[in-house]
Image 1: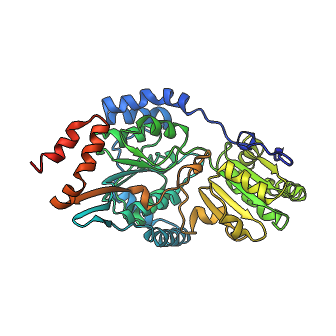
Image 2: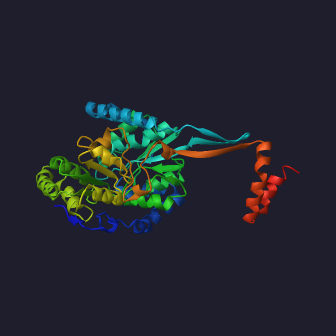
Length: 429
């Protein structure tokens, strides 16, 4: 079922040889540009037109009524409510420890620089609603924003025909449990444009976070700069670095769990053990047929973005997973934690047999909004820090400025910006 890539004996950079989903976001940008421009020019009317065209829903008010949000949590299954409550508590516990304190450095007597961490004022949180519904994504976006101190939070999620044109009831319930009451039944590129530009019913935001399909990603790319964005989320991916101590039942189940998201999802096994690959193949054959979404999973696992990569040893495997820079990386080896601590590139790392990616998706306390497509080489997942801006406060007295004035003037003249130096000299004439 899995494509095999044999890198044994190879000393070349593996980056170009590894499987990965290919998306041409630039083409999608051109396609959604008219939708975004229409929202900028015509506001809510353009949002309604796009929603009817793409989602088959005729919207009245864009904003979800407060009573509908309250009713969704009242109707929530008790087990689902308990699970969401636990996920919120664990996520809040982890993210609370991420809050950064202001730091003041005395550079010289009378001269200080303070780095002050200030939250973004208003944030739009996008929650997808296509092949699956994601109340957990509400938790992962809202909690760090709240911990950071964001004062105004708004959620946008696609309307669902089977929920009377409102977003998924479980998404609404998660909003209610988190105290978010500004929710809009808008999805796709029109939702990103609505949040960025604002319309009659929704004030513009300063930042947009949350995953979405290629049209959402394209809209975020187009509007980067109008608003801040967290990342351009691509199809989900898992890489598993495993040796012959790994249980093939676990490995197969975890590969399947990510393939379940989307036909473009990537599931990659990296191992020096050909016997493990064969055992995992046998397990995949058994387990895939027993899943609910067999077709979607089969398409993802057999696609060019997934595969089994054979390497000479775990050292070579470590180089491969660092080159791949997976959104989710599992380490199922002997001394798994030691190998995990040597990884440089991954969105999140899951250590050993009892830390599957599914745990991180819901109840580990970590965040599941993570960099995809190799972006873990340079970017982090969503965190409290995503919603904070560092502002430097420079506070020098007369003596401290006088002491360094000559150096400022010298550097200003070197750069042929004499007025910079004169602005300092003017204070001492």
